[in-house]
Image 1: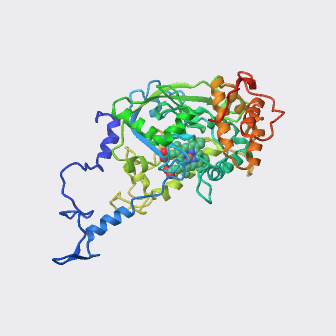
Image 2: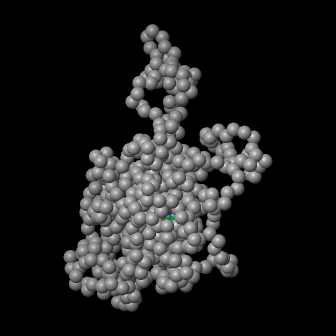
Image 3: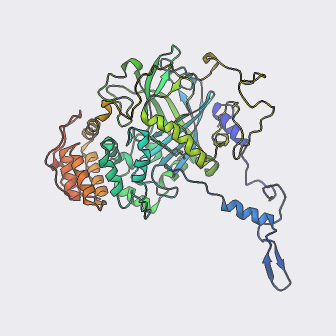
Length: 537
Ligand code: HEM
């Protein structure tokens, strides 16, 4: 990596905190005093035998105490992950959409760190389980950090962030015996899905081959939520962000995923590490879908609803940039584990929308990182921006920036941090007109929960449909409660009658007789006879 580049800026910054354990430095305590050996605890010894160990030994106590406190809480979701450094560049300016140089300046190279993850398993769980994959990108831009905290599936289970604790609790291990929903009992997960028709589109994706990717290098990434871009003329567009891998999108088959989970649970982690170590750098194209502000209400779905895609025949994806991952982490804990992504990290020219899932996420990430990493988490080497940070935030556990001077408030007589106008680079919120009543409600367009699930099913090839049917066969077969799998089979009839009938034959329960009219576009539903050999595998 050329250290003259912007990519090198972040590496130079990290070098200030990096030490090489293979050099010939002497062994010391954490407070710097040299030690001769780390083999024997100080003790009372006589000629014949050794006696009691002495609590006095500060070196031995320090070693044990440091070890005792090595673990921090794992992420409440997305605990298992892998990451890498890389660079991002736009090859076509998006100046018609935004004034953010990271998306307009084609001569710029922006350093990035990316973390891929599974959602539900703990830190030590297997890589190849059926699950959504996280795809989180931190851009160290010259205007501050910008994070796209996305997934490999373009939609989500819920529309409103208030439901996040429920969907995650229902999918995480059972509270009484800690048996993971994803591997054994599935009652709570599918009970949640039945009780939330808004989840229908997402669970179809989760039962598809997208949920068992072949490699992190072969996954798409989606920002999922609707963001906004503001251009130099002050015009606003609603946007969605997409990463598409140069290697194409590939999945395992279920049989492979099951075997790998047993034989090689680090399959994805090793695949990414080895590719980068061998110079086979994974690349993704960066795309934007954009809807002018004036067209917000011209679609038959709500463009702020995270359970909906923006079909590309209505809103094409424009590919304008490329990301390459080219450097493995130096140390897992201080980089992959301590990195803290926040959807609220945006730079001038990029903004939020009223997407009710995004607004809740903007609160949640910052909040959870206070308990995972502490209030000064932004100072950690992997998280700090490459541009200057100056404000009057103070103190807190493990603060290590030392600020000189007496001024600790704003504004002040020294004119420290003087006010700045937008032209001087200040972040200015878009002057959005807002009017309404205070209420807990969603607009009517949020209430169509089946059309896009049908659209997804109709767009699958025969073999992909077979895989989805088999996935339902496997998953619902693990529900012990007949009410849960029985109701879910009926729910599938809201998507496609043949799908529901075939799954009913695999898992039991009443075979549905009537389906919902198919509103989806694309090919009509396949006849049941196309799946004669479908069995849970
Ligand atoms: C973590 C994506 C919805 C709360 C993550 C991570 C990703 C992600 C990729 C892992 C970040 C990392 O690698 O460190 C998404 C996507 C969502 C979504 C795409 C839907 C559009 C939500 C919602 C909430 C939430 C609705 C809460 C209201 C969290 C929390 C973490 C997390 C608390 C752990 C963060 C940490 O400890 O560092 N999410 N998430 N997410 N997400 Fe989400």
